[in-house]
Amino acid sequence: MILILLGPPGSGKGTQAQRLVERYGIVQLSTGEMLRAAAAAKTDFGLQAKEVMDRGSLVSDDIVIGIIAERIGEPDCANGFILDGFPRNVAQAEVLDLMMAEKGLTLDQVICINVDEDILFTRIETRAAETGGERADDNATTLRHRLDVYHSLTAPIIPYYTDSGKFFAVDGMRNIDDVSEEIYAILD
Image (cartoon, rainbow, N blue to C red; front, side, top):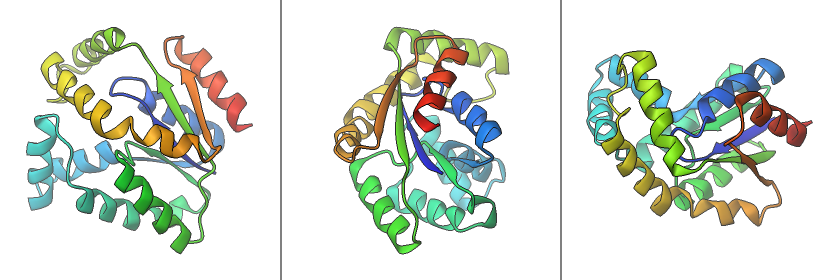
């Protein structure tokens, strides 16, 4: 099973991805986590990525695509994976299609978690309080910028996937368990 989770920052993609990992035994490929790991390792690329992410901006397509291409070829992805945070724009979606075709893989579903923006600010503030501000991008200013980027770059890929017949939107305003059940119903 190969899935893409879409939704604005703070919509619950990471939470739902973890539940899908447990239920279906597939791997979550979080672009943000991969980039944060590189930043924590203080590699040259990681430091560049950290600077970009701390501003709430997106790391270049070439770097992200390269990371994804290598990662989906690893053995733990053989049973499937969830792309969380990728693709972020139409160009990445098109490259993903080509990359998967070259590897003989097929995208099964694209699930978009919809959430009202006012709630996103509350969620980000809560996450920052719970983690002690561990992530530099968990603040209202950065979230506003990330939402602007999401609306201008990522939201336009929704029609790209809607036309594929593999796109489903879920109501992320409900409690976590109800959102999970709606996603399971789509996948089962």
